[in-house]
View 1 (cartoon, protein in one colour):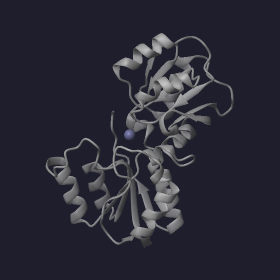
View 2 (view 1 turned 120 degrees about the horizontal axis):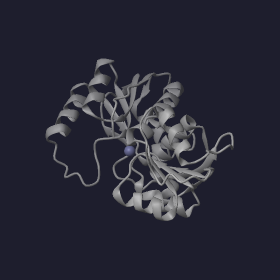
View 3 (view 1 turned 135 degrees about the vertical axis):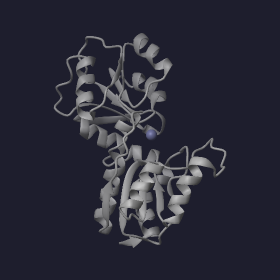
Length: 252
Ligand SMILES: [Zn+2]
């Protein structure tokens, strides 16, 4: 077990939380128990995750998507009231890291997604260097974009939306987990032949066709379910905590 403050300080340092311009606060979002013994990790601080954490007796939840986002008007009503009420009633700490948890070089979402897909990053690109550019670990590449899409589909066990399935062999692959549609142009500029992320919006389909770069939308949740458990397991080992990852399935 450890003190809450030591736990949060450890994560802030590990993830270099102060280095990022982000869409919400990183670190401790809701204060609960002063000591951390039983940690649950998850992708999003949804009511289902909070209820599951309560049922296993957790005192601390570590997530990628916390409760407070730029643009929210700050009212504690409806779903936000319900989630907060559960956390406060059970004295549970909510600790959230967004971009710092995407970016960590070995434990972050992008690094852990690469492990799942058998990719290795050779460089970083785009805003705050969040995107990864690399290749297949074995250097073999993929016969074409459809072969890459099939590979990702198998590894993530989720359908992939592929745009611009050209027939050229794919060796230079860029990726950025979650809702990183906006990094597509930077990936193209960095020289990628294919770009993997969680979601697609209307403009990216045209850019993929017109620029000749394959676009793979692989699921926001599916591409972001590996970072939080990796970071939590690392912290749990450091402090000798009980830890479990609870995956609340999400089709998006
Ligand atoms: Zn996300």
